[in-house]
Length: 120
Image (cartoon, rainbow, N blue to C red; front, side, top):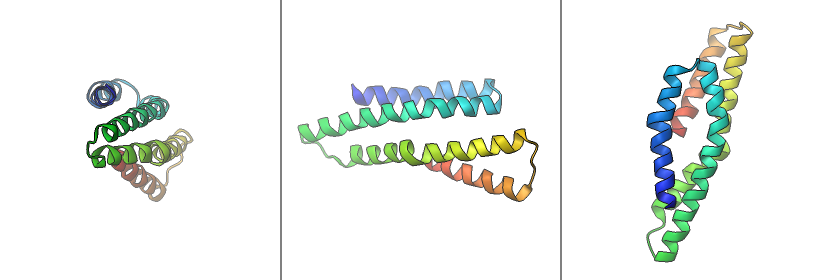
């Protein structure tokens, strides 16, 4: 059940809800909404993956895949997502204040892209 809940949540978030919101909301609204949803998303993922890992251990199944998934989910929950959100909100603040510095904007864009890519 835990695997099914987490897998279904991944499919729904990635291929349905996320794409629909991205296509239909203003960029900053979409980003701010995702910033509120992702902590809950990764909490659910952490809990489900922990249950999968513990159940697998109890059944004598190999722990490697579930342990790796748990490690990446925790990395997303505790570091990658919060840091990406921080950079995203900094970019939005600069845009909203009309601040334009191509060097700073490029650096922030690259930093966000890297964090977002690792998170994905």
